[in-house]
Length: 406
Image (cartoon, rainbow, N blue to C red; front, side, top):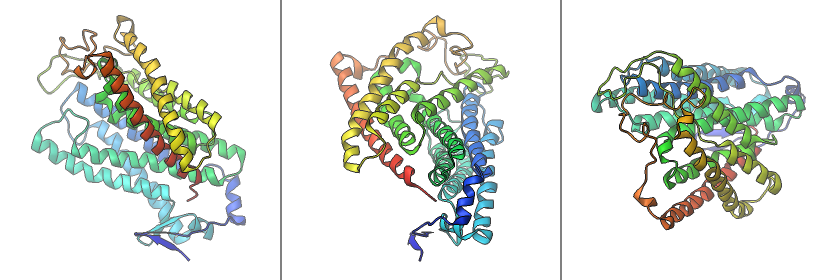
């Protein structure tokens, strides 16, 4: 008998049968690759859109960057719609048993999360257009319509992760499982990219010698890294996801400046003639590696009570590893040696950045909150608290993802 939670219904037990065992030999289903493509389109479209704002300024609904983002919603609609109709009207007993019901239709949980994300994206489009008409062309990443859009975009990436993990947790064929492991950590790397984009305004290189950046990073990244590390069956999932995040940002930083473009909205302080890149990504691979090493030592299993005991350790390891690598790397980014195609410093200057700014003059911003060593220590201690709470949520989310079957 089915149980219900709100309007979602699910069969409480899933017992594999001969038909279900046959899926072990099928391989990775095409729709998992399709939603991974949609998640990729989400991240590429967002980075492209930020570059568009940095370079051109003038914004319409029909920009190529927007179309790239909304392509993701189209892929999700077609893919998840097909799976929902097939499962509902032509699905086997096993397919229906490992699905979740919503409004009379049945589909995997990850598919429903992706569908919700696509609806949120489509809802945000007219809202964002109205916001621009009412308040002008914004230059901030965080605004009410952008927040609705971000929630929808994150949902598509999270849905792809959950859907892939449901297969990973059911499959016993080692070859298929390895492909699912790689696909999951790729999706997890895209989620890290989403987190990095949403806090981008707080991670400018001029802020890298202040505690605010490290507090914001401590709130954001341990959750995603630990959820990925615990949910995956790979040996180095947090490290691999971090490399995906860095790889996507670096590739976009190399590719976008190859295209010519000019500002169309004043005032123009920096007359760029090419698409501006987002800044070089944070070196998350080092804290990702530290988290993987610690999890290999502590193990992925553990009760919620044990998670409360280990979360401060994970939080401390993340913040120490991140601080140890990012602080000195900031000195390099602020030096003339980084002004080249590899690190694309100089190509990441928006048209609205005046030549007198700290970015052009390689000057770190000194926050009054970090005026003394004691205040810096206080800020970093707060960062450890944030990292602990973020780690605890990530451990809980990862434990859930490690058990998801639907």
